[in-house]
Image (cartoon, rainbow, N blue to C red; front, side, top):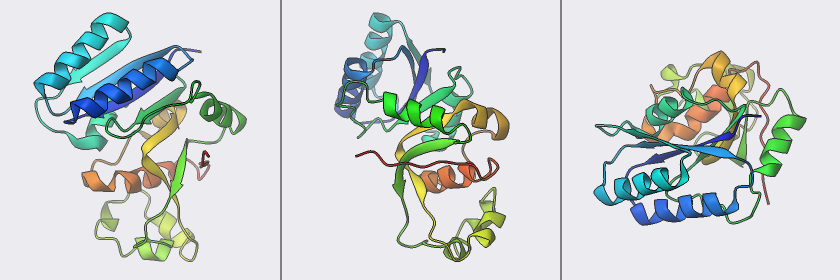
Length: 207
């Protein structure tokens, strides 16, 4: 298998990014590439990222001239991925503290070949059922609006946007995140993307 692709989108908070990256190299057991899209051009951040790239040799760094926010920046990185499994980590708060943190995620995806995306289950207190989502202010921009009708009376969950594993085959088939939705709806973007892949998405929670 090709080295894992691990994605970070950075903006500010260089101290948090340093901690995220340091723990990533300390606790990841599989070979991996680190793909970073920087939206902020913070001098301290860029200096750190360039030093990591020079030292480790497995870093691909994109410098965006403007803030593309998470969806578009993540799509930039997804277009460059080669691994069957892709991890997205929030560069501000996803600290992997357990050696081999990625192994259970990969095992779950291999055990469920129709799973498109996996991560922590979450839900919105404002949009609980499919019928609730039909009242969402950006519902007309959802890529799979008919799904809300199918699950009109069912509680809807989505994979929390700060950490997830994504199957590249799904991205190859349906594309990346819905850039028509605002930045703060990336979690909804995750949900609308996964529900396009033949309805065969798997979600799990880690303890």
